[in-house]
Structures are given as C-alpha cells and as structure tokens.
Image: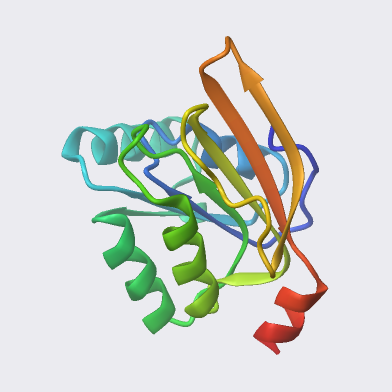
Amino acid sequence: MIGPFFQGGNALDLFAGSGSLGFEALSRGVEKVVFVDKHPKAVHTINENSKQLKLENRVEIFRADAFRAIHAAAKRELDFQLVLLDPPYGKVNYEELINEMIQLRLIKQGAWIYCEHDMSEKLPSDHPYLNVVKQTHYGGTIGITIYKMNEEGSAYLD
C-alpha cells in the first residue's frame, strides 16, 4: 500500500505499534526508519522485530508522545522522505499534526505521507503544500490517504 520503491532516505513511523509499516518501508529501499510509540509494549515489539530482521543499524526507536517526538526530531534537524501515520482512530487531529511537521521542516521535498484512519475522520483534502495521491478504504471503516509534498510546499522548505 505504501506504493513506490525508495532510493534511500529516512522515514518516520509515528504511532508505530509493531512497526510493520516502517519495516515495509525498509524493505522498499528506505535507508533508515525512526519508530515512535508511547506504549512500552510497542517499543519492545519493534526492538525485538528489528533484532529478528537484523535491522538494528537501520532503525531508531523512541518511546514518546508524537508531538514531543517530532519536536525532538526537528531539534536534531532530521527530515523525512516518508512519514507513516497510523494513530489510534479518533485520537489525533491529522491536519494539526501534518501542519506541525511541515512547520518544523521535517518533511523533505517530494516526501510522501501515509495516513491510516477511520473513515469517519476528516483528513485535509485541500492543503496548500500537499497533494492527495490516493484515497481508498477497506471494509467500509478503515481509510488510507496518501499525500505528496507539492511544489509550493517544496518552495516553502527552501
């Protein structure tokens, strides 16, 4: 579902859970993934999965709240070619989170943002810096929206 293959670059897997989206990104050519989840069990699972897959040198794992994590990433001057968002349904304002990441300059030129969400949640459809590349749903309740940074957003980051 992530779609394209990547030629390196970094990914951010917020609300990572087991890390399945981030590990898929690694298998598609992303160089490194920063995994973030606030639940100790999720962090433990990601750590174990990275060891089992022998990917420890290509991952960073943090136990933190998403907003704290993106501010910490900005302080480290990290940027991402791919951002994976799969929060607990109904618990996150996607537009606020995406706008914060753009303002913090975490999203690279041409970056992709993958959002998994409940179909009842409203995601930005008319954003000045992002184009909706794909929207789909599964089973009538789970939605997938994929964005790509557009030229205006790329100019904003310069």
